[in-house]
Amino acid sequence: MSEKIVLVTGGTGLVGQAIKHIIDTEPEGSRFGKQPGEKWIFAGSAEGDLKDITQTRALFEKYKPTQVIHLAAIVGGLFKNMKYKLTFLRDNFLINDNVLHVSYEFKVKKVISCLSTCVFPDKVEYPLDENKIHSGPPHDSNFGYAHAKRMVDVQNHAYKEEFGCNFTSAIPTNVFGPHDNFDLEDSHVIPGLIHKCYLAKKNNTPFVVAGTGKPLRQFIYSYDLAKLFIWMLKEYDDVEPVILSVGEDEEVSIKDLADSIVKAVGFKGQYNFDTSRADGQFRKPASNKKLLNLIGGFEFTPFNEALDQTVKWFVDNYDKARI
Ligand code: NDP
Image 1: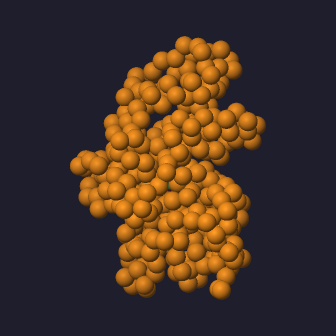
Image 2: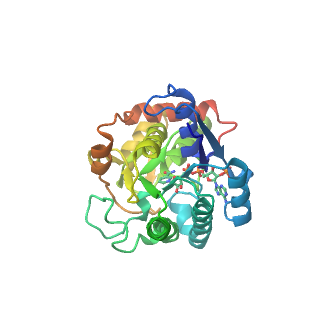
């Protein structure tokens, strides 16, 4: 049996740590578990800055991966995206270009890169599906991030057509779970609100939610997403991306989300919405039809159960969480 070495870039982040958790806990040889003879490497930026091609080559030279799950990215919520458009565009483009090109140089057998449903056009017919990525400009709030990520799909096709590479991509909806970035301003909505609510409870102050609370989102628990990445690595060999998401009927409003967080944190004080803050896109439901047809059914963790686990992780790990 030839040795399989799976390198996970961005291995120290929310999604990378979730994949590590599943690899460490699922039975060996099971559908989502580590396969016999497989070695998994979870690399963070301390192992090399992937914006730099020399450091990227050194990382690949060190581990000689046969498979790559490419998660490393500059990531953030709505407000960070609006503030750092050029940084999101340029840094993500450099990281993706280096990882894909060095994977080609090192003859990596398969690369799965990570896009996001934020890459889809602003004006588009819903639900989003895998064929609509390039059919119009992205929302202005995140055009830097979106264009850098869209290019990965273009690059995957070009590497396949010119060199026959087996490069593909996954498109997750909003992810949440342990090891997220819980920064108050720069994070995604769930970790940001969990942290705010936690502080409101601790300091006996009001819990203020940015925006109207009306937008709708699909959220996927990082441990579920991790299983889907492991499935893709084992069973999916096509250049076209796959949306990794809960169903369209599982949209949650920010108000419902805030209510659930209040409950999970045990906050009893006053809470309200700051309607002077931006809402972002109202809704952007994505279809998981392709995923379900391919995988043949998948049991997602119920939203409130996943949220409770995330809040518990944050409270238990407050001292070492990214805040
Ligand atoms: P995190 O911010 O939690 O983690 C980012 C990871 O990227 C970290 O491991 C970080 O390393 C690494 N990284 C950042 N810059 C560099 C660099 N220059 N060189 C090497 N490594 C670097 O992100 P997530 O886990 O949330 O995101 C993973 C992927 O999923 C990303 O591609 C993101 O675009 C995508 N995604 C995320 C969603 C979400 O809701 N979170 C939604 C949809 C897609 P370190 O921490 O060690 O510095």
